[in-house]
Image 1: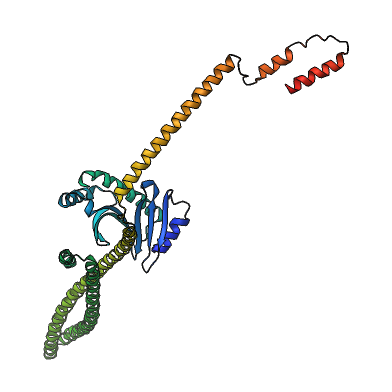
Image 2 (image 1 turned 180 degrees about the vertical axis):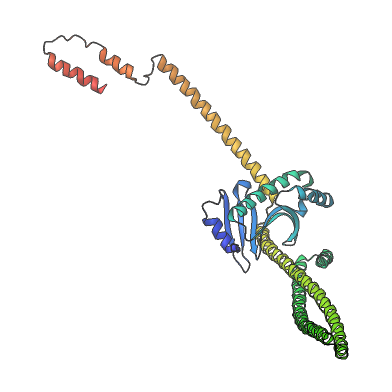
Length: 141
Length: 251
């Protein structure tokens, strides 16, 4: 079994591996006790993803919309639950960020995933988030 | 799993307090506690397992001793009967009866030990699975927290500028904006191309009409050489030829 990634080692690998298809993808390591990789997807309207590795898991999160941007929370929640099983490789979730409720699209991978799988996850997550935002246009202000 | 119920209860409480950081901190505490409980259960199961396996070994050794005795006494009985010593045979038979009763008892005890052993092994495996799952859940919570903190830091940066935290909606807006810009650039480029296209057409027609010089081709150059040199008036033909050659060279 290969060694699991850490946030730092994954960041370095993503930056230095020439085979990683990351055109138009800007990576920044945000330090701290538990560092994260901030990913700006220039070809996805500068969508900002966050990635962190902890133990056995890689977590990648993408901001869908703020709860304050939703017209009818109940209807939107139901729409999210119904869309979720159809969403390949990503999940929809709700988190409180800086005192505000934020709907997120996120993906989880094993920290032993090969680099191409992580790169695919990043692209798919960005695609899925924008597609979800478009699909939910009627629900949003 | 009871752990889900506990975490859901936390969320319900937090909805009133409007403090989800509390939920996260408590979720971690609950998960940590669950791991510790499961680890303790695992240690206990392993301890019990070791004890019971030792007892089973002792019981099994005893059983083997009794079985050896059983063979031994059986031989004595056969031999005593062969020598027509019925009294002795009866005495040994009485002992064999006790030994056989003991064998039955020991076998039953060993059967019970085996039952306990397989139950403890199953609960050890279960505890191991629970611990592994809980650790995965802790990893998820930790990774989620890191990401949440990073997003909160981004939100805080935006708060200073009065802008909201950027979401997919802003990205969609940006993409639309860029598409509009690109479309505008494209139409400007097309217009420019059309203009230069008009100019090119005009140039071509002027050249065709012989108003502006066209491109020199191999044919036009050849035509220039083939044109007979004008008849000179003077007799000094050599300098004249030089002149013509020089003139042709510079043309």
